Image (cartoon, rainbow, N blue to C red):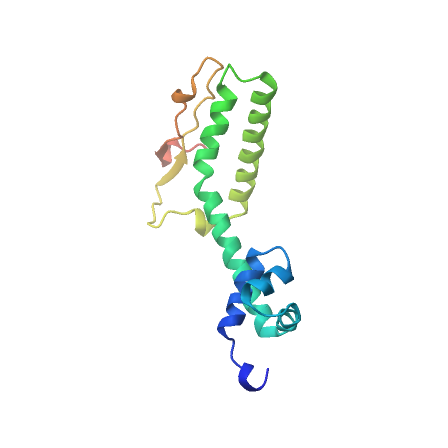
Amino acid sequence: MVGHGAKFGQKMEQAVVALLSHRSIDEAAREVGVSANTLLRWMKEPEFQAACREARRTVFSHAIGRLQDAAGAAATTLLKIMLDPNVPAATRLRAAEIVLEQATKAGEIAMLEPPDVARETHNRSAEITWLRATTLPDAATTPSQIEAPQLTTATEEDVVE
């Protein structure tokens, strides 16, 4: 833009936010106090497009973070449903399927990580940290008896090649 509109102004910043929070361009324009045509013109400008992309990335990143924060609670809920004998068998079966699917995905992701990511910050040549596998609880196990896996440290002698 040339002239008085050369700077990315407060109205444009408001328009970026309005576009993220309204269902239509007309609603977003009304919120900001500009015409829909003005907003459409701004949307064609590279600087405005970049600001919109960055705002979308930020909103999406925050949403993913919130979901990750809730993952522990979701896993606990899923395990409680899976083990509750009062829940219909079909629901418990679906919960078990979800647990297996997510465990498989997590294993695949872990295998794709570069080796340096999985290493501990300090170098231990004689020790390897293992996640201790516990047996699955039986149907009589109550949800409160489910324990989180414990990390243990194995020495070189414990490792079978």
